[in-house]
Every structure is written in structure tokens, then in C-alpha cells.
Image 1 (cartoon, helix red, strand yellow):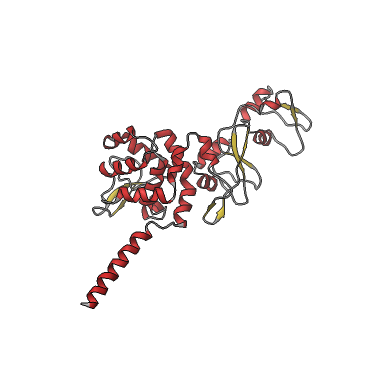
Image 2: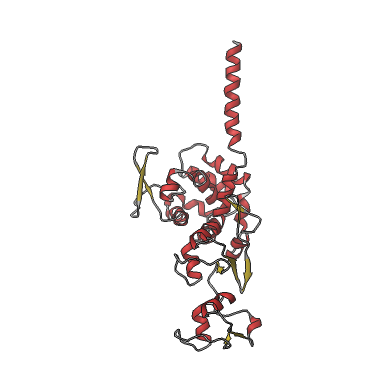
Length: 305
């Protein structure tokens, strides 16, 4: 009888330990949040889905990006094919050899997750809820059949509260998305790039070994978009110290340059000057009435607005 009592107590202790472990802060989860929070906020601003819900689902469904689906197919939300015409991957789930969607990047997965919810008849009622009402969103997702786990809503809510993900639901602009990224945060133990702001834009300085892809993964923006913002090919090699803009550049420099010229220095190019002031290269040529075959000369003065 004593042994049986001990056994029951031991089992109860183990079960409670497992339950509590799910509510303990995890550095791997925090790294995932740092990496994808901006993407989740961007999706919220575009599709009206709480960023907290998107992040919590991504964390839970992908095991913080470490699931087989996430690693092999960039599928962070466990979305099955359901008429999908893109690439697929097959995996055992509720049944054997089920069809899941496969993406080129995690960011495509985030975008498709938003589209999946917004276009699905069963989730339509969720979009009448407030963006800040993450509890109702979590319960609504479970009621609509997103997952079969009876504790699915509770697990989402626990994650949101533990990591304060509800704070991201307050963001109301792309600017706030970017300012959430600070040098005090880390990703995989490494400090994130300090971010600056100039000419109504945000920028970072490239570090040794950076690529548009690595920067995109850190910031939570498609690396293809970042390359386009900087008027570059997405596979270009980056030089240490060069400025990388994180939004589409302006057509002209700030107002203080209205009556000022930039005098070309040795080693500069039209592109490096455009990057310095956060101006689109085409606009720099246009405002100075220059053609693309203009040969740059040291000492020439260029209008900046």
C-alpha cells in the first residue's frame, strides 16, 4: 500500500513537472520571437490578425522553428495541402502520409498562414474580434477546428502571457515594427544589428559575412524585399560597413538639403551617394538631369532634393 501511494505521488509529481515546464521561459522560444516578431506585426497590419496569435501559433506548431516541417518545408503553422497547388511534402500526422504545404522561406509560410485564415469560411467570425483580444482569438481558432488538441487555446494563451506577446498587438505602423528591433536583443546568442533612422527610413550597417538573407532572417522581413529596397540583386555580396536600408528609399534627401549640393569625392559612385542619403538611384539621376551613362567626376555638385 505504501509503495502504491509513493507510485501515485511520483506519477503526479512527474505530470505536474511536465505541465509546469511548458510554462517556463525558454531561450530558444525567445530567439524565435526575436527573429519573427517583426514579420508577425507586418502580417497583423496587413491582415488584421493579432501578432501575438501568429507568433504563438508559429512557436507551438513549429517547435520554435525546429520541427521537421519547419526545417524541411519552411512550414511553421502545420498547414496541410487543402487544394494547395504549390510544392508539397508528405508526413504522418493525424493519418499516415498526409500532404502538407511547402514554402521557399519562413516568410512565405507566415504570409500563407494569414491568407489561409482570412480566406477560410470557418475562421471568418474571428475577424470581428478586436486585435487585442488574443484570448478570444485563441479560443476561436480551437472552436473552428484549427487543431485537435483540446488544450490548444490554453497553450496559445500561456505562451502569449509568458512571453508578453500581447505587447506586439499594440503596434500600429511599420515604423513601430522596426523600432521594436534594438541592440539590446540577441538572436542565437549574438547581438542584433543596432538600427538607425534617417530620411524617414531605418537602416543598419552590414557586418562581415552578412547577406541579404541573414539580415532578412534577423529583421523578420523578406530578404528579397530588402535587396529591392537597396536596388541590389538578392544574391549580391555585402561589404562590411555599407548601409542597408530596411524600407523603400525616398525620392529626395531631407529638407535641410533643399539648397545644398553634394560634391563628389574620390571613390564615390552615384549608387554610394544615393545610399548615403537614402535616395532612390533613379531619382538622383532624374533630379540632376543626368542619364545612366553619366561618368562621375570628382568635384561635381549633385542636387539631393
